Image 1 (spheres, rainbow, N blue to C red):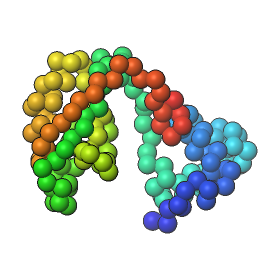
Image 2 (image 1 turned 30 degrees about the horizontal axis):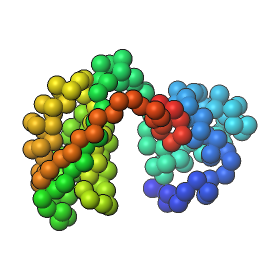
Image 3 (image 1 turned 60 degrees about the horizontal axis):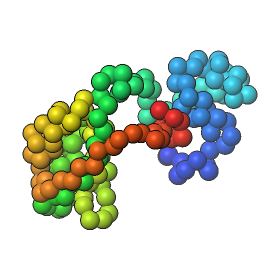
Image 4 (image 1 turned 60 degrees about the vertical axis):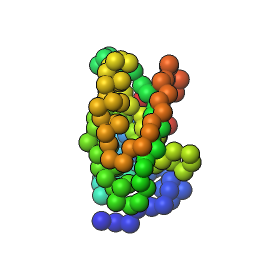
Length: 161
């Protein structure tokens, strides 16, 4: 695998254009992508392959509307662990990764250890998930929940979701 560039400053305008177009429409054909960025098909395809092979492009997905799927309850959960040694962190991380309701999990430097973004159908399903799943994750000592009333802005690398 090639070395991954440090940041976007290491990309030229064509690389940045490829990433922007794909962030907006990952289903675009290579020919249309080439036309949009102003290169021919072969160099565009080579650049695209390099961005994939170096792990800059992690994959291609459909963005689903959670509201239309009946998942309109969002809670942010502060989690404090009883043990923060490396083995405990690995155990917690692995358990969190297996929970589809947890959309995001971030280790935090502050008064608590993790911040989780949890999406469920409603308060009843969230309450059950908190009690039966989050509270039973490895080394959880305590939690605090903040319920989102409205998503004002949600983006994925600058693209509105």
